[in-house]
Image (cartoon, rainbow over all chains, first blue to last red; front, side, top):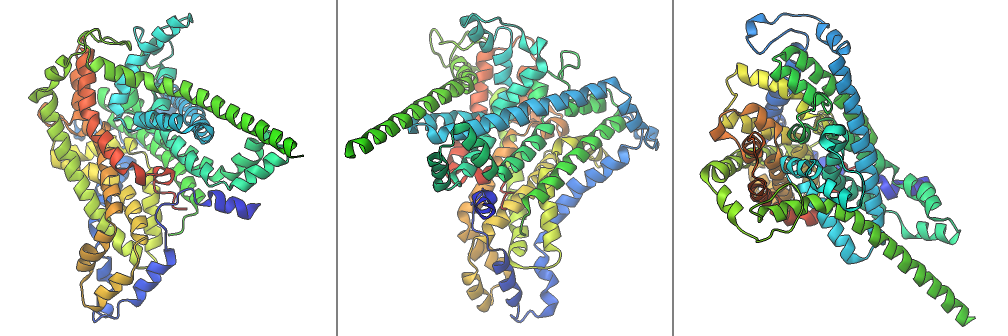
Length: 321
Length: 286
């Protein structure tokens, strides 16, 4: 069983065939061409431009972020910046608005990424395997179009959809269901659904690939043994695609944690602070309230959470490089 | 006996049809939900009196498109987007191709940690470092410059591009290169004359994917660019329509379509190469 599992979702990717050892081993044999030993470091020279850019514009800001987070820097002048130790973090943990932002970020991530994108993506991928071809094509096109549209356009579309005068309420009226002002009464749910609308295609594509890797014989064998749909899903399909589920959840969560434009354009974190997730809170403190030091401390916390997820993700992949 | 098998087969057929119909119906409902916001976009763009609801325009018109096709609303921001994203894409793809070559062909004790760091970086939330990036840019006077923003945009896409490019390059056989090496070609010659042409489709995918990502990026130019005449379409659509008291929804929809069309077309161009695996961030070359 474990061997089968390995092939079934060990390679949910299947993009270009990788020749991990081959290329490298041949490469080392290949430099007896006149250049000799002196040229060995030179052949790593092409790495330089990328490395310089990454150090300057990615590692640099991260280092700067760590430094600023421990100071009381304000936007109004750099002369006032002093080292304040852990004050920013202490302040954050006793700040009601910060705790509110953490809570809303958890709700946003749980509803939109873990429940929404992941489950709907899996359901769509499964249903598409059973559906007829035209339906499958149309569904794929519509869901993927929502994904490819620029973030800010998606935000405007869903703003129009959830407004009091918007399409959702029109549909609810037509069904004789109670309508309400979604962006005011349940702003965090509205932006979560917006994120589901925008991000489900990604999970759908991943699960489609993973499901197509499951050998037909296995599902057929289970069918012959009399396992019904739910049992087949629970005991066969889900275990076989568990690695894809893991990576998908991880990547969804990471991208959901850093959603800013969608929320900013739809609600600006409001009304009040009722849809203010951590990125919006960070922006609000650093720029609108000019507390760069405090905002950066929040950013650093976000970065650490992201980094932890990334480490888990890299380990989960067990990449061969 | 034979009749029995036929009956079983027919029952099986019926069940299969039932499953298919149920799946079709479920998908139709979900698709309708996903479609409504898109329908609003299409219908409002040709409706002079568009509001926030999906409805058929009483008399379809191109008024909205004509109204937004001005220098201020459409041409300048789109040109800015093109300059910003185009230059950043070229920079990213060039650096990624250069970096991917030694990573794919040679082995040393640095290459594995280097690649793992790259993979780790692809997942970091770029949003979180925008505050310090802004701080740094203020200190070195790069704020509100197109080239500074382009450099940062290029770097933000670089880890993923390197990873993707390296995986594509691994798929190119080394035989031809070895011939070139024996003929005394230099590394750059081998890379530009042999390897890159061979991985043309892969390069195109990396290039287009990077461009799509950058074209839709809102937060980076929103933070780093200030002057209205430098703003790309992703930000100008927000400042122009988001800040105006009474929004003309038809024009907003028309401009959204103009702004989204390039990436939709580019996506269709590469969609065949984009399986689920690619979507996983190429990262999942597990």
